[in-house]
Length: 289
Image 1 (tube, rainbow, N blue to C red):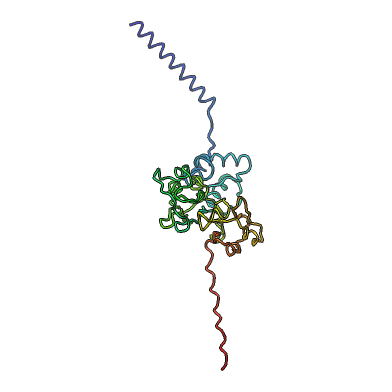
Image 2: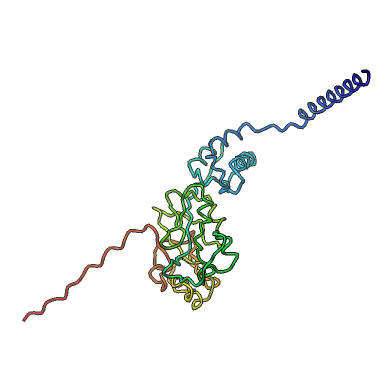
């Protein structure tokens, strides 16, 4: 009986000492949470999509509060909430932010089923990552959209789908928040975030094929051949040719559309522009008899 009593007393003493030590440590090493942090988290949309570059809204909120303490929150933004949410955060933190231009995801592939011939049959895991790991896929183009929908699965906003007729991913710009999840999901780096543009108008090259012109055209009739005609036509130095591929810098592009008209493979796309007015038909003058 004495042994049991002694054991109980010893264990009780150990527990009491441990409790005191833990209490002292919790007070000494306690981390005080900034009261602004939960307020910023409450303003953010809570999508936790990772488009801001952080694992979730909590990570962005922490970076914003620390940035405010350092004197600047430049470079930090929430693509889902956009300018409205960031303005509220800036007001809370007593900071000023620059007006950022909205962006949208763009699928840079024009190789529809008709233009990109099927040369093989893939019978495996139906993901773009798996098909890409196996080679060029079912067509001869090792750069084009694979159409398995990894981007669709990654999008939390139902803003991207695979067109069953073309086999290419298409973005619904009204739903797209430019979080960048589809960009990260695409194993071929076909999807890019670009400026939405005034009235949603933008011009871009719908191809990422870096093969030489004849090789690219052999596998896809809508490939960029790197001929340089668009570059020569552009007066704003917005177009560069690198690795047989044309690229339009959306920061320099003035939306004149001259490159669209001069492209021999019609791979430069102009989105949301009004339809050109039909040219008036001039009737030949009748000769007097």
